[in-house]
Amino acid sequence: MSETVQLEQLINEKTGVEEESRHLDEEQRQLKLRAKMLCEKIIQELKKKNNQKQQSVSQLQSRIGALEAQLNTLSVSSVLGENANEGANGNGDEGEAADVLEEEMQQTEDNAVTVNEVDNEEMTEDTDEKQGKKKRKFF
Image (tube, rainbow, N blue to C red):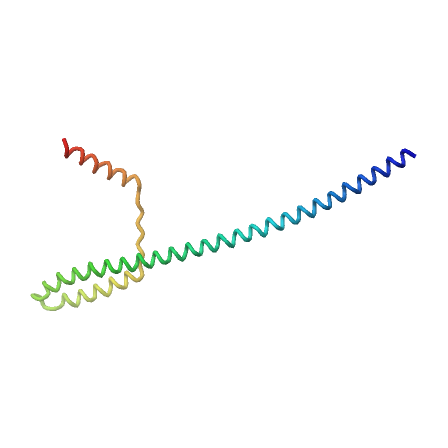
């Protein structure tokens, strides 16, 4: 009889371990699903932030373009002012050339964005040279 009791205990233990295994498999499946959903939410949030950053970049590019256009307009108007003074003595072709130049500048400004790279080494060298010159001035 003791062998039968032991066999029943082993069968019950086996059944319990199998049940625990199924429970752990289900929990693992649910955790994987939750992790997947969280990753998707993170991706959505990152996309939102990227869109906001892209809008900010676009706004800054537009603002830079407008400022460059304003600067070029001021530069052209100062050149045109000088040419107008000289043009009073000329034959009038210079005024037409200035108008054409202004139109071409405006078209270029509308289509162009300028980005300049700054090299830290060059800045350091320039700063060192300026400081060296300043030091020499005092001696």
